[in-house]
Length: 124
Image (cartoon, rainbow, N blue to C red; front, side, top):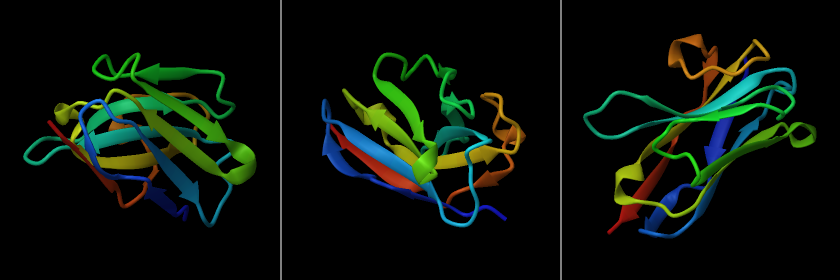
């Protein structure tokens, strides 16, 4: 069982930046596609970004395209989400997920394991 731990969340003002990290503590994720999702209060979990096993392919939700960047360091077993120009509507719990498959996906149901989430709050 892969264990993912997210970190880097916090309370920031609109326009600020944050970098989230997702580290695997038990198993290598170097052959797995990874993704970030978020869930705001009262809403369903929504796709944010995904990256393939090598980092050569990424895909973003329209709402974050141009502001967020997903990346990975397989040597560190870690995936990152750089979030710039944050908006109040970005406020949510952010979850990191992994797929045993190597290819990217925006469907949460296709992910095999998840972290516990990290809270991001953006004030106006």
